[in-house]
Length: 504
Image (cartoon, rainbow, N blue to C red):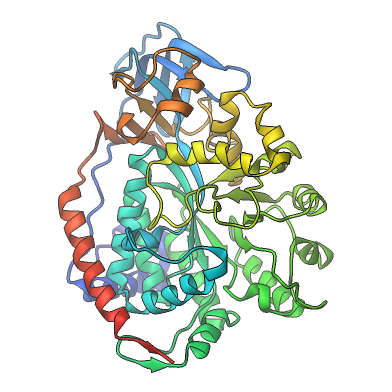
Protein backbone atom coordinates (compact mmCIF):
# COMPACT_ATOMS: atom_id res chain seq x y z
CA UNK A 1 0.00 0.00 0.00
CA UNK A 2 1.12 3.57 -0.59
CA UNK A 3 1.74 5.70 2.50
CA UNK A 4 2.54 9.37 1.95
CA UNK A 5 4.87 11.49 4.02
CA UNK A 6 1.84 13.27 5.45
CA UNK A 7 0.41 9.89 6.47
CA UNK A 8 3.68 8.99 8.17
CA UNK A 9 3.76 12.16 10.21
CA UNK A 10 0.15 11.69 11.30
CA UNK A 11 0.19 7.97 11.97
CA UNK A 12 3.57 7.29 13.50
CA UNK A 13 5.48 4.04 13.15
CA UNK A 14 2.91 1.78 14.78
CA UNK A 15 0.13 3.27 12.69
CA UNK A 16 2.03 2.74 9.45
CA UNK A 17 2.67 -0.87 10.37
CA UNK A 18 -0.97 -1.62 11.24
CA UNK A 19 -2.29 0.12 8.12
CA UNK A 20 0.22 -1.68 5.94
CA UNK A 21 -0.72 -5.03 7.43
CA UNK A 22 -4.44 -4.34 6.94
CA UNK A 23 -3.91 -3.22 3.36
CA UNK A 24 -1.63 -6.14 2.64
CA UNK A 25 -4.09 -8.66 4.01
CA UNK A 26 -6.85 -7.18 1.91
CA UNK A 27 -4.74 -7.24 -1.26
CA UNK A 28 -3.63 -10.80 -0.57
CA UNK A 29 -7.24 -11.91 -0.29
CA UNK A 30 -8.09 -10.65 -3.74
CA UNK A 31 -4.99 -9.63 -5.62
CA UNK A 32 -6.54 -6.20 -6.20
CA UNK A 33 -8.37 -3.48 -4.34
CA UNK A 34 -11.31 -1.35 -5.37
CA UNK A 35 -10.39 2.15 -6.54
CA UNK A 36 -11.82 5.29 -4.99
CA UNK A 37 -14.52 6.61 -7.29
CA UNK A 38 -13.95 9.94 -8.98
CA UNK A 39 -15.74 12.44 -6.76
CA UNK A 40 -14.63 16.00 -7.46
CA UNK A 41 -13.95 18.67 -4.89
CA UNK A 42 -13.72 22.00 -6.64
CA UNK A 43 -10.80 24.27 -5.78
CA UNK A 44 -13.13 27.15 -6.59
CA UNK A 45 -16.38 28.17 -4.87
CA UNK A 46 -19.44 26.37 -6.28
CA UNK A 47 -22.55 28.45 -6.94
CA UNK A 48 -25.79 26.49 -7.34
CA UNK A 49 -28.00 29.01 -9.08
CA UNK A 50 -31.80 29.48 -9.31
CA UNK A 51 -32.80 26.34 -7.39
CA UNK A 52 -36.09 25.86 -5.60
CA UNK A 53 -34.75 25.04 -2.15
CA UNK A 54 -36.41 22.69 0.31
CA UNK A 55 -34.17 23.88 3.13
CA UNK A 56 -35.65 21.87 6.06
CA UNK A 57 -34.44 24.86 8.08
CA UNK A 58 -37.25 25.98 10.40
CA UNK A 59 -36.41 29.66 9.85
CA UNK A 60 -35.89 29.56 6.08
CA UNK A 61 -38.64 27.19 4.97
CA UNK A 62 -38.99 26.78 1.19
CA UNK A 63 -37.26 29.21 -1.18
CA UNK A 64 -38.05 29.81 -4.85
CA UNK A 65 -35.24 30.49 -7.35
CA UNK A 66 -32.50 30.99 -4.77
CA UNK A 67 -28.75 30.44 -4.94
CA UNK A 68 -26.48 28.43 -2.65
CA UNK A 69 -22.74 29.06 -2.41
CA UNK A 70 -20.42 26.20 -1.41
CA UNK A 71 -16.92 27.05 -0.19
CA UNK A 72 -14.81 24.06 0.74
CA UNK A 73 -16.97 21.64 2.74
CA UNK A 74 -19.54 24.17 3.96
CA UNK A 75 -22.51 26.19 2.78
CA UNK A 76 -21.15 29.74 2.74
CA UNK A 77 -24.20 31.74 1.66
CA UNK A 78 -27.82 31.53 0.53
CA UNK A 79 -29.34 34.35 -1.48
CA UNK A 80 -30.95 35.58 -4.68
CA UNK A 81 -29.07 36.71 -7.75
CA UNK A 82 -25.65 36.10 -6.19
CA UNK A 83 -22.54 36.91 -8.19
CA UNK A 84 -19.30 35.27 -7.09
CA UNK A 85 -16.06 35.86 -8.93
CA UNK A 86 -14.37 32.71 -10.26
CA UNK A 87 -17.17 30.45 -9.00
CA UNK A 88 -18.07 27.18 -10.69
CA UNK A 89 -21.74 27.68 -11.60
CA UNK A 90 -24.37 24.92 -11.54
CA UNK A 91 -27.60 25.85 -13.33
CA UNK A 92 -30.39 24.48 -11.13
CA UNK A 93 -33.36 26.31 -12.66
CA UNK A 94 -36.51 24.19 -12.34
CA UNK A 95 -34.79 21.74 -10.00
CA UNK A 96 -35.23 21.15 -6.28
CA UNK A 97 -32.25 21.43 -3.93
CA UNK A 98 -32.64 19.65 -0.60
CA UNK A 99 -30.41 18.41 2.21
CA UNK A 100 -28.65 15.10 1.76
CA UNK A 101 -30.63 12.43 3.58
CA UNK A 102 -29.50 10.51 6.66
CA UNK A 103 -29.78 6.77 7.27
CA UNK A 104 -29.41 5.98 10.95
CA UNK A 105 -29.24 2.18 10.75
CA UNK A 106 -27.90 0.15 7.85
CA UNK A 107 -25.92 -3.11 7.79
CA UNK A 108 -23.85 -2.06 4.80
CA UNK A 109 -22.08 -5.42 4.42
CA UNK A 110 -25.38 -7.12 3.60
CA UNK A 111 -25.52 -5.47 0.18
CA UNK A 112 -23.23 -8.33 -0.83
CA UNK A 113 -26.31 -10.55 -0.46
CA UNK A 114 -28.88 -8.42 -2.25
CA UNK A 115 -31.75 -10.59 -3.34
CA UNK A 116 -31.29 -13.22 -0.65
CA UNK A 117 -34.68 -14.32 0.64
CA UNK A 118 -33.87 -14.51 4.32
CA UNK A 119 -36.45 -15.19 7.01
CA UNK A 120 -37.11 -11.97 8.85
CA UNK A 121 -40.51 -12.52 10.46
CA UNK A 122 -40.31 -12.40 14.24
CA UNK A 123 -41.62 -15.96 14.66
CA UNK A 124 -38.80 -17.23 12.41
CA UNK A 125 -36.08 -14.85 13.56
CA UNK A 126 -33.58 -17.63 14.29
CA UNK A 127 -33.60 -18.42 10.57
CA UNK A 128 -32.01 -15.03 9.91
CA UNK A 129 -29.44 -15.49 12.66
CA UNK A 130 -28.49 -18.95 11.39
CA UNK A 131 -28.10 -17.47 7.91
CA UNK A 132 -25.66 -14.90 9.34
CA UNK A 133 -23.74 -17.62 11.16
CA UNK A 134 -23.28 -19.44 7.87
CA UNK A 135 -22.54 -16.43 5.72
CA UNK A 136 -20.06 -14.15 7.45
CA UNK A 137 -17.49 -16.92 7.91
CA UNK A 138 -17.54 -17.52 4.14
CA UNK A 139 -16.84 -13.89 3.21
CA UNK A 140 -13.25 -12.83 2.56
CA UNK A 141 -11.80 -9.45 3.50
CA UNK A 142 -12.17 -8.44 -0.13
CA UNK A 143 -15.85 -9.33 -0.01
CA UNK A 144 -16.32 -6.97 2.92
CA UNK A 145 -14.29 -4.30 1.14
CA UNK A 146 -16.42 -4.61 -1.99
CA UNK A 147 -19.63 -4.56 0.06
CA UNK A 148 -18.54 -1.43 1.95
CA UNK A 149 -17.55 0.32 -1.26
CA UNK A 150 -20.67 -0.58 -3.25
CA UNK A 151 -22.92 -0.06 -0.24
CA UNK A 152 -21.62 3.47 0.25
CA UNK A 153 -21.95 4.27 -3.45
CA UNK A 154 -25.55 3.05 -3.52
CA UNK A 155 -26.38 5.25 -0.55
CA UNK A 156 -24.98 8.34 -2.27
CA UNK A 157 -26.69 7.41 -5.54
CA UNK A 158 -30.07 7.51 -3.78
CA UNK A 159 -29.42 10.86 -2.05
CA UNK A 160 -28.11 9.57 1.31
CA UNK A 161 -25.03 11.53 2.34
CA UNK A 162 -24.66 10.31 5.93
CA UNK A 163 -25.30 6.87 7.39
CA UNK A 164 -24.68 4.79 10.49
CA UNK A 165 -23.15 1.49 9.43
CA UNK A 166 -24.01 -1.09 12.09
CA UNK A 167 -21.09 -3.35 11.14
CA UNK A 168 -22.08 -6.65 12.75
CA UNK A 169 -20.70 -9.02 10.12
CA UNK A 170 -16.98 -8.18 10.27
CA UNK A 171 -16.01 -10.75 12.88
CA UNK A 172 -12.21 -10.47 12.67
CA UNK A 173 -9.65 -7.71 12.30
CA UNK A 174 -8.92 -8.25 8.61
CA UNK A 175 -12.59 -8.11 7.69
CA UNK A 176 -13.27 -5.11 9.92
CA UNK A 177 -10.45 -3.10 8.34
CA UNK A 178 -11.50 -4.15 4.84
CA UNK A 179 -15.16 -3.22 5.35
CA UNK A 180 -14.26 0.13 6.88
CA UNK A 181 -11.81 0.94 4.09
CA UNK A 182 -14.40 0.13 1.44
CA UNK A 183 -16.93 2.45 3.05
CA UNK A 184 -14.35 5.22 3.39
CA UNK A 185 -13.42 4.89 -0.29
CA UNK A 186 -17.05 5.24 -1.36
CA UNK A 187 -17.04 8.81 -0.08
CA UNK A 188 -20.17 8.58 2.06
CA UNK A 189 -20.11 10.33 5.43
CA UNK A 190 -21.43 9.25 8.83
CA UNK A 191 -20.35 6.70 11.42
CA UNK A 192 -18.79 3.23 11.08
CA UNK A 193 -19.98 1.29 14.14
CA UNK A 194 -17.86 -1.83 14.53
CA UNK A 195 -19.58 -4.53 16.56
CA UNK A 196 -17.35 -5.72 19.39
CA UNK A 197 -18.29 -9.41 19.29
CA UNK A 198 -18.48 -12.73 17.43
CA UNK A 199 -15.50 -15.10 17.22
CA UNK A 200 -16.55 -18.12 15.10
CA UNK A 201 -14.19 -21.10 15.18
CA UNK A 202 -15.53 -22.77 12.02
CA UNK A 203 -15.58 -22.14 8.31
CA UNK A 204 -16.52 -23.61 4.92
CA UNK A 205 -16.71 -27.40 4.91
CA UNK A 206 -16.94 -27.74 8.69
CA UNK A 207 -19.54 -29.59 10.76
CA UNK A 208 -20.47 -27.96 14.06
CA UNK A 209 -23.43 -28.06 16.47
CA UNK A 210 -25.79 -25.17 15.75
CA UNK A 211 -25.91 -24.47 19.48
CA UNK A 212 -22.15 -23.92 19.48
CA UNK A 213 -22.29 -21.59 16.47
CA UNK A 214 -25.01 -19.56 18.17
CA UNK A 215 -23.11 -19.49 21.46
CA UNK A 216 -20.05 -18.13 19.67
CA UNK A 217 -22.15 -15.41 18.04
CA UNK A 218 -23.71 -14.44 21.38
CA UNK A 219 -20.52 -14.55 23.48
CA UNK A 220 -19.22 -11.41 25.24
CA UNK A 221 -16.47 -9.37 23.55
CA UNK A 222 -12.88 -10.54 23.86
CA UNK A 223 -9.65 -8.58 24.23
CA UNK A 224 -9.12 -9.13 20.50
CA UNK A 225 -12.35 -7.25 19.74
CA UNK A 226 -11.40 -4.28 21.90
CA UNK A 227 -7.93 -4.17 20.37
CA UNK A 228 -9.39 -4.30 16.85
CA UNK A 229 -11.67 -1.41 17.77
CA UNK A 230 -8.71 0.61 19.06
CA UNK A 231 -6.72 -0.02 15.88
CA UNK A 232 -9.67 0.95 13.70
CA UNK A 233 -10.03 4.18 15.63
CA UNK A 234 -6.34 5.06 15.53
CA UNK A 235 -5.50 3.99 11.99
CA UNK A 236 -8.63 4.81 9.99
CA UNK A 237 -10.63 7.39 11.93
CA UNK A 238 -8.10 9.56 13.78
CA UNK A 239 -8.17 12.46 11.31
CA UNK A 240 -10.25 15.39 12.53
CA UNK A 241 -11.56 16.03 9.00
CA UNK A 242 -12.61 12.45 8.26
CA UNK A 243 -16.05 12.13 6.63
CA UNK A 244 -16.61 8.90 8.56
CA UNK A 245 -16.38 8.78 12.34
CA UNK A 246 -15.48 5.90 14.60
CA UNK A 247 -18.35 4.22 16.44
CA UNK A 248 -19.07 0.93 18.16
CA UNK A 249 -22.01 -1.44 18.25
CA UNK A 250 -22.84 -3.60 21.24
CA UNK A 251 -22.26 -7.34 21.24
CA UNK A 252 -24.81 -9.72 19.71
CA UNK A 253 -25.57 -11.33 23.05
CA UNK A 254 -25.95 -8.19 25.15
CA UNK A 255 -29.60 -8.96 25.91
CA UNK A 256 -28.59 -12.35 27.32
CA UNK A 257 -25.75 -11.12 29.52
CA UNK A 258 -25.82 -10.16 33.17
CA UNK A 259 -25.92 -6.48 34.06
CA UNK A 260 -22.42 -6.90 35.46
CA UNK A 261 -21.19 -8.08 32.05
CA UNK A 262 -23.17 -5.32 30.32
CA UNK A 263 -21.49 -2.68 32.50
CA UNK A 264 -18.04 -4.09 31.70
CA UNK A 265 -18.85 -3.91 27.99
CA UNK A 266 -20.18 -0.35 28.20
CA UNK A 267 -17.18 0.84 30.24
CA UNK A 268 -14.66 -0.81 27.93
CA UNK A 269 -16.41 0.53 24.85
CA UNK A 270 -16.61 4.07 26.20
CA UNK A 271 -12.93 4.01 27.10
CA UNK A 272 -12.35 3.97 23.33
CA UNK A 273 -14.39 7.20 22.98
CA UNK A 274 -16.72 6.21 20.13
CA UNK A 275 -18.79 8.95 18.52
CA UNK A 276 -21.81 6.63 18.83
CA UNK A 277 -22.44 3.45 20.78
CA UNK A 278 -25.20 1.67 18.88
CA UNK A 279 -27.59 -0.86 20.42
CA UNK A 280 -30.21 -3.17 18.95
CA UNK A 281 -33.17 -2.93 21.34
CA UNK A 282 -35.90 -5.59 21.19
CA UNK A 283 -38.17 -6.43 24.10
CA UNK A 284 -37.42 -10.03 25.12
CA UNK A 285 -40.34 -12.45 25.39
CA UNK A 286 -40.47 -13.74 28.01
CA UNK A 287 -38.61 -11.12 30.02
CA UNK A 288 -35.39 -12.43 31.62
CA UNK A 289 -35.13 -12.45 35.42
CA UNK A 290 -33.87 -9.51 37.45
CA UNK A 291 -30.12 -9.09 37.13
CA UNK A 292 -29.98 -9.88 33.41
CA UNK A 293 -29.89 -6.97 30.97
CA UNK A 294 -33.39 -6.52 29.56
CA UNK A 295 -34.25 -3.00 28.44
CA UNK A 296 -33.46 0.72 28.54
CA UNK A 297 -34.75 0.87 32.12
CA UNK A 298 -32.02 -1.55 33.21
CA UNK A 299 -29.35 0.58 31.55
CA UNK A 300 -30.79 3.69 33.15
CA UNK A 301 -30.84 2.12 36.59
CA UNK A 302 -27.18 1.13 36.13
CA UNK A 303 -26.22 4.66 35.01
CA UNK A 304 -25.16 3.45 31.55
CA UNK A 305 -27.24 5.75 29.34
CA UNK A 306 -25.69 8.89 27.86
CA UNK A 307 -25.39 11.18 24.81
CA UNK A 308 -23.50 8.53 22.83
CA UNK A 309 -26.30 5.93 23.00
CA UNK A 310 -27.94 5.26 19.65
CA UNK A 311 -30.89 2.84 19.85
CA UNK A 312 -32.07 0.93 16.81
CA UNK A 313 -35.72 -0.18 16.64
CA UNK A 314 -37.00 0.03 20.25
CA UNK A 315 -40.52 -0.57 18.96
CA UNK A 316 -41.96 -1.57 22.33
CA UNK A 317 -40.21 0.98 24.49
CA UNK A 318 -42.47 2.46 27.16
CA UNK A 319 -43.12 6.18 27.59
CA UNK A 320 -40.91 6.09 30.68
CA UNK A 321 -38.04 4.53 28.70
CA UNK A 322 -38.36 7.13 25.94
CA UNK A 323 -38.07 9.84 28.59
CA UNK A 324 -35.02 8.11 30.12
CA UNK A 325 -33.31 8.00 26.73
CA UNK A 326 -34.28 11.60 25.93
CA UNK A 327 -33.19 13.04 29.25
CA UNK A 328 -29.78 11.37 29.08
CA UNK A 329 -29.15 12.73 25.57
CA UNK A 330 -29.70 9.49 23.64
CA UNK A 331 -31.10 8.92 20.17
CA UNK A 332 -33.31 6.44 18.31
CA UNK A 333 -33.59 5.10 14.77
CA UNK A 334 -36.58 3.26 13.33
CA UNK A 335 -36.27 1.10 10.24
CA UNK A 336 -39.89 1.37 9.24
CA UNK A 337 -39.87 -0.84 6.16
CA UNK A 338 -37.89 -3.57 7.91
CA UNK A 339 -40.07 -3.28 11.02
CA UNK A 340 -43.37 -3.99 9.25
CA UNK A 341 -43.22 -7.65 10.41
CA UNK A 342 -42.52 -6.63 14.02
CA UNK A 343 -45.13 -7.21 16.70
CA UNK A 344 -45.53 -3.45 17.27
CA UNK A 345 -45.39 -0.37 15.04
CA UNK A 346 -42.30 1.77 14.49
CA UNK A 347 -41.94 4.26 17.33
CA UNK A 348 -40.14 7.20 15.67
CA UNK A 349 -43.21 9.46 15.50
CA UNK A 350 -43.97 9.08 19.18
CA UNK A 351 -40.30 9.54 20.04
CA UNK A 352 -40.11 12.84 18.16
CA UNK A 353 -43.35 14.07 19.71
CA UNK A 354 -41.76 13.44 23.12
CA UNK A 355 -38.62 15.35 22.14
CA UNK A 356 -36.36 12.34 21.58
CA UNK A 357 -34.23 12.70 18.42
CA UNK A 358 -35.43 9.98 16.05
CA UNK A 359 -34.48 9.08 12.51
CA UNK A 360 -35.06 6.30 10.00
CA UNK A 361 -32.88 3.75 8.19
CA UNK A 362 -32.92 0.86 5.71
CA UNK A 363 -31.56 -1.87 8.03
CA UNK A 364 -31.28 -5.06 5.93
CA UNK A 365 -30.42 -3.63 2.52
CA UNK A 366 -30.09 -7.11 1.00
CA UNK A 367 -33.88 -7.49 1.14
CA UNK A 368 -35.17 -3.91 0.88
CA UNK A 369 -35.05 -1.29 -1.85
CA UNK A 370 -32.06 1.04 -2.16
CA UNK A 371 -34.41 3.89 -3.13
CA UNK A 372 -34.34 5.91 0.07
CA UNK A 373 -37.40 7.96 -0.84
CA UNK A 374 -39.39 4.74 -0.45
CA UNK A 375 -38.12 4.45 3.11
CA UNK A 376 -39.18 8.04 3.80
CA UNK A 377 -42.68 7.14 2.66
CA UNK A 378 -42.62 3.92 4.69
CA UNK A 379 -41.74 6.04 7.71
CA UNK A 380 -45.05 7.84 7.27
CA UNK A 381 -47.15 4.76 6.49
CA UNK A 382 -45.75 2.85 9.45
CA UNK A 383 -47.58 5.18 11.83
CA UNK A 384 -50.90 3.74 10.68
CA UNK A 385 -50.18 0.34 12.22
CA UNK A 386 -51.05 1.94 15.58
CA UNK A 387 -54.10 4.03 16.42
CA UNK A 388 -51.97 6.11 18.81
CA UNK A 389 -49.28 6.76 16.22
CA UNK A 390 -51.81 7.35 13.43
CA UNK A 391 -53.23 10.22 15.46
CA UNK A 392 -49.73 11.73 15.57
CA UNK A 393 -49.28 11.35 11.81
CA UNK A 394 -52.63 12.97 11.05
CA UNK A 395 -51.23 16.20 12.52
CA UNK A 396 -48.20 16.15 10.19
CA UNK A 397 -47.39 18.51 7.39
CA UNK A 398 -45.60 16.67 4.58
CA UNK A 399 -42.23 18.09 5.62
CA UNK A 400 -42.58 16.32 8.98
CA UNK A 401 -42.18 12.97 7.23
CA UNK A 402 -39.02 14.14 5.47
CA UNK A 403 -37.71 15.53 8.75
CA UNK A 404 -36.87 12.02 9.99
CA UNK A 405 -34.39 11.70 7.10
CA UNK A 406 -33.03 15.26 7.19
CA UNK A 407 -32.90 17.78 10.06
CA UNK A 408 -34.27 15.61 12.89
CA UNK A 409 -32.59 12.53 11.45
CA UNK A 410 -29.22 14.28 11.62
CA UNK A 411 -29.91 15.19 15.24
CA UNK A 412 -30.65 11.51 15.84
CA UNK A 413 -27.12 10.72 14.62
CA UNK A 414 -25.52 13.32 16.90
CA UNK A 415 -24.88 15.49 13.85
CA UNK A 416 -27.68 18.04 14.05
CA UNK A 417 -25.34 21.03 14.23
CA UNK A 418 -23.43 19.89 11.15
CA UNK A 419 -25.89 18.65 8.56
CA UNK A 420 -29.55 17.87 7.85
CA UNK A 421 -30.68 21.22 6.44
CA UNK A 422 -29.66 23.73 3.79
CA UNK A 423 -28.31 26.31 6.22
CA UNK A 424 -25.31 28.63 6.18
CA UNK A 425 -22.42 27.11 8.12
CA UNK A 426 -23.54 23.50 7.77
CA UNK A 427 -21.79 20.93 5.64
CA UNK A 428 -22.63 21.06 1.96
CA UNK A 429 -24.40 17.68 2.05
CA UNK A 430 -26.83 18.40 -0.75
CA UNK A 431 -29.10 16.65 -3.25
CA UNK A 432 -30.33 18.26 -6.46
CA UNK A 433 -33.48 16.71 -7.91
CA UNK A 434 -34.47 16.88 -11.56
CA UNK A 435 -38.23 17.39 -11.77
CA UNK A 436 -38.80 16.87 -15.52
CA UNK A 437 -40.03 13.29 -15.21
CA UNK A 438 -43.74 13.10 -16.01
CA UNK A 439 -44.59 11.40 -12.72
CA UNK A 440 -42.89 14.13 -10.68
CA UNK A 441 -45.82 16.42 -9.84
CA UNK A 442 -45.59 20.15 -10.53
CA UNK A 443 -48.11 21.30 -7.92
CA UNK A 444 -47.95 21.43 -4.15
CA UNK A 445 -45.22 22.47 -1.76
CA UNK A 446 -41.67 21.32 -2.43
CA UNK A 447 -42.04 18.90 0.47
CA UNK A 448 -45.29 17.55 -1.00
CA UNK A 449 -43.62 16.93 -4.33
CA UNK A 450 -40.49 15.30 -2.91
CA UNK A 451 -42.06 13.09 -0.25
CA UNK A 452 -44.91 11.89 -2.43
CA UNK A 453 -43.31 11.62 -5.87
CA UNK A 454 -39.49 11.65 -5.83
CA UNK A 455 -37.45 8.53 -6.44
CA UNK A 456 -33.81 7.59 -6.95
CA UNK A 457 -33.95 8.22 -10.70
CA UNK A 458 -34.70 11.90 -10.02
CA UNK A 459 -31.42 12.44 -8.16
CA UNK A 460 -29.44 14.64 -10.54
CA UNK A 461 -26.50 15.67 -8.34
CA UNK A 462 -25.16 14.83 -4.88
CA UNK A 463 -22.54 16.67 -2.85
CA UNK A 464 -21.00 15.15 0.28
CA UNK A 465 -19.03 17.65 2.36
CA UNK A 466 -18.86 19.88 -0.72
CA UNK A 467 -17.46 17.14 -2.99
CA UNK A 468 -19.53 16.31 -6.06
CA UNK A 469 -20.21 12.56 -6.31
CA UNK A 470 -23.11 12.46 -8.77
CA UNK A 471 -23.83 14.81 -11.66
CA UNK A 472 -26.34 14.69 -14.49
CA UNK A 473 -27.92 11.62 -12.92
CA UNK A 474 -24.68 9.58 -13.03
CA UNK A 475 -22.22 8.63 -10.30
CA UNK A 476 -18.81 10.01 -11.21
CA UNK A 477 -16.21 7.40 -12.12
CA UNK A 478 -18.37 4.42 -11.14
CA UNK A 479 -18.48 1.40 -13.44
CA UNK A 480 -21.71 -0.22 -12.25
CA UNK A 481 -21.48 -3.05 -14.81
CA UNK A 482 -18.06 -4.14 -13.55
CA UNK A 483 -19.06 -3.81 -9.90
CA UNK A 484 -22.22 -5.85 -10.44
CA UNK A 485 -20.21 -8.60 -12.14
CA UNK A 486 -17.80 -8.71 -9.18
CA UNK A 487 -20.70 -8.83 -6.74
CA UNK A 488 -22.41 -11.64 -8.65
CA UNK A 489 -19.23 -13.75 -8.72
CA UNK A 490 -18.66 -13.21 -5.01
CA UNK A 491 -22.29 -14.04 -4.19
CA UNK A 492 -22.08 -17.34 -6.07
CA UNK A 493 -18.88 -18.35 -4.27
CA UNK A 494 -20.17 -17.34 -0.84
CA UNK A 495 -23.46 -19.19 -1.37
CA UNK A 496 -21.58 -22.33 -2.41
CA UNK A 497 -19.24 -22.15 0.59
CA UNK A 498 -22.07 -21.41 3.02
CA UNK A 499 -23.86 -24.52 1.79
CA UNK A 500 -20.84 -26.61 2.70
CA UNK A 501 -21.22 -25.84 6.40
CA UNK A 502 -23.22 -28.48 8.28
CA UNK A 503 -24.98 -27.42 11.48
CA UNK A 504 -26.06 -30.34 13.68
